Length: 335
Image (cartoon, rainbow, N blue to C red; front, side):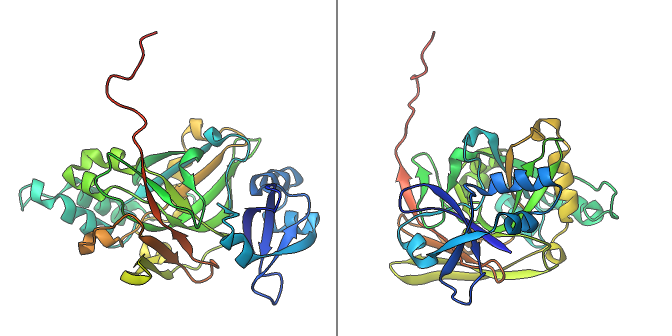
């Protein structure tokens, strides 16, 4: 099952079911559903899954997928519709085979050739202990915070790039979507295509700047895929400039291509009590080993990032836009 969130012609929020018709452009509207989060909370209360809750609500009417996209009415497939501050956006790095060599190449010039970088060390720990037996605790991965729901950019819209940014680079990733139940237990709704978006030049200066480089806007969607994943997934990441593809590369994800299991990464995120507040939403990026920056590509304002993954429906597309600086040194007021 695949779900989207969108707004109708009057601006009201709606949830749509993708693939319920033989017409690929026809999206069925879930009856009386204003958000995916509300459907998830109702499913938790009823003691069944998301698919059963959608079936219980039923479908009423339909809408054109092309029209939603063309009119910029598509939304990210999960958010906190009442308060963005109750949506946490985070991620894990050095989780994919090949991700360590990519990161290592960024920092190798800063350490003696014979020394192992911290990036390679953490990656090796993942290879050795990131895939524990079911129910066991494995080694933790790198973890980072991106922001709250205010940094989520809807599919099809432009990702703001702050004036102080040194780079605006895509990161094609698998994204996990979660809601915390009343019993403080996390519930996975499913997965989506994600563009984690980072400042790779800043990160390259020092691995201690990783936290700064991740505090950027990002996007995911447009569709939420409900249910288990194949062990291996393969898609494409592209940069389109003036209507032409200027960079394209295949990326691989799924546990077969990772040094950690999903279960292990989820455990090390949700083991923290402050991440288990009932009703909260969590958007978690699982990492990538494929970025255009590693191929020497410098992105430009107006570039379109396109990330596609079979089985996830429509590709994720976003442009960029320069963001004006909202704060200058010395502007903090003393009260």
